[in-house]
Length: 513
Image 1 (tube, rainbow, N blue to C red):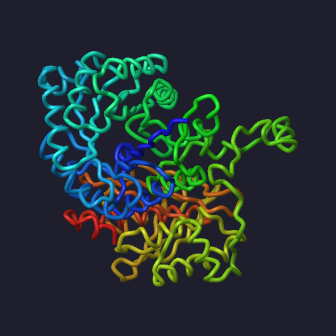
Image 2 (cartoon, rainbow, N blue to C red):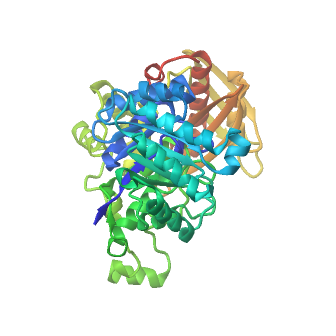
Image 3 (tube, rainbow, N blue to C red):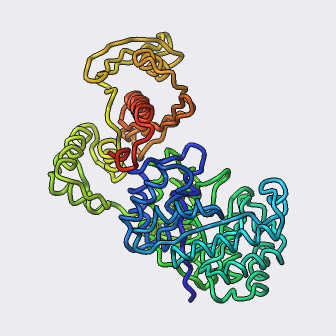
């Protein structure tokens, strides 16, 4: 059985999802989870995009020891220098350089001829090779490129030392048979292709990213570029969990495997949702809330008799096993620390004490604390910016005959402030009051609510996105009371916005505090 290299680009292409930007601490936390998941390559970012992105990639390169750490660069010396500066301390660094090869991109975007693109591709790989032994070259919009020209570009890249050449379906235009045939053509007509790994990178504009990727792998590609939850530009990328579980579940048919620890799939999915605020649709394959749920009586009867009647995968395989250690208000610090270790968190004594206090407060409200609840506490207490605003008190009055009213007490730089206001609903009243008290000029561009678990005592998780003068900040809050969760999220977003406004040039390490 051939091994497929899993190249995860959640931190780079996934972050390009509208509203999915991450700070350095969040990127580092996710990179650690990706390494635990067992991905072969982590594309940590695009260092030339901003000084902050360069620093975030550098932090990841210094932390990750097992997986390769890749940095993206356009086919230019400056981009490649920045990529190398970011990953040079990685245990296994990879420079990933690219240029478009389709005629539509050459004519309208690059304003270059085919010979110029050929020279640029070869030159970029040649220069990258003087810095890193491991160099990947991508032909952007490869699926819409002339196949013979594509082969010539790949040949030039390989001759200059590229260890991987990547064929992207950048705009999700291909269909499986067509894409599989293109992969076969490239393998057959590219001189020296045996000296490199052929990779594929598919987008999901027509909902065919996973199908196209599997067709490419069946045709002979041996690296697949994916993201957790399929996030990415426009309609997203090939979903890691879908490809990996297809290889795992249908290995008899596909004949390929990966090194992924499948039990870490659901924790990774949950972490990406928590960090980005992008919720997974309930019917999403493998990681959706309904993926292993059965409501129809016939299905329930079948599953009770034999799970394989309606489940082709065991939920435990993707990390959905029941907790063996149930945490509640009587749980002690040792049990709590042990659970954090199971979830992959190693906290200092100071951070542990802070999170444990919050855990006890939540345990007084909920009978059973789930893993997702603990992850929210970690996000709120550890992965947060300094508080300029603190929510001290919230009282909401609403009903069929009452005017929705919110009374709020905040601490602004430690000084108490009180206010009250109205709205078309209780949350609108809460936000209006907080906005008036903080004198914010920000615009609320996104508001979403998600139940972390089942049950009427489930924590509600609220995500808001605020925008002001080109700055965008994500705010998150969770509480069994959805109004309080909303207020926490709004205040958290305002704190992040203030932090960005006051510290526009901080390093990634400083931003991670």
